[in-house]
Amino acid sequence: MIKLSAGRVDRLVAVGAHCDDIAIGAGGTLLTLCGARPGVRVDALVLSGGGGEREQEERAALAAFCPDADLRLTVLKLPDGRMPTHWDEAKAAVEELHGRTDPDLILAPRTDDAHQDHRGLARLVPTAFRDHLVLGYEIVKWDGDLGRPSAYQPLSPETAERKVRLLQEHYPSQRHRPWYDREAFLGLARIRGIECQARYAEAFAVTKLTLNLGD
Image (cartoon, rainbow, N blue to C red; front, side, top):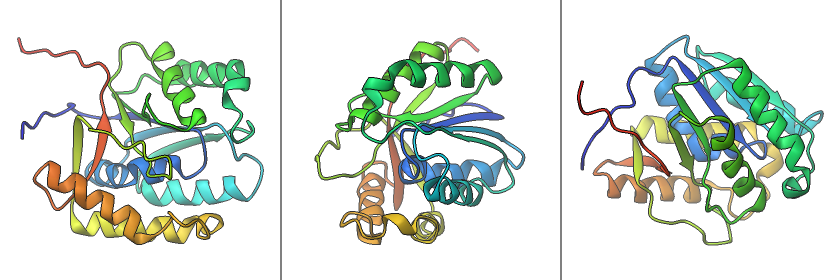
């Protein structure tokens, strides 16, 4: 397993179509990065769920997933499941996000995610952030769209357990869903850990990567 570093991450962008997407797909990575670099700036954008219970859940959750970070969260009110018909609003939000930060790393959905909202947002991100490293996180769901990831962030057992605990604690509105449980989250993390020779891991898709081997 080849190990590469993204370099020093002082500014991070995390985007999700729905409240809980970021935490499910990259919560362990956020805990790892923010724990290693106190004060890191995290600009987070969520397209739907604003103005209600879901936004309250998201604000509390991301505060817990980004300890000691300079967290700046925006939650919009686009309708769930209708992102393709609200393309202009979503694009404007992503472009506005780019206008206020120049991140070292972006966490976003995968471009081949089966959910139309996830997929649409994933395809918008590189139209605004053209020269940035984008890691596409995965979200387990009934569609069966998990693929073969190309990048991994190993998670310590403590971090993996903490991620699951925070997901259960901060998103009570999702507990009724049959896939939203400890076995699903920890099971996927265990499989991704096997693939990168770690106990647990989160996995990501990388669609474009520029190397600098001369320095």
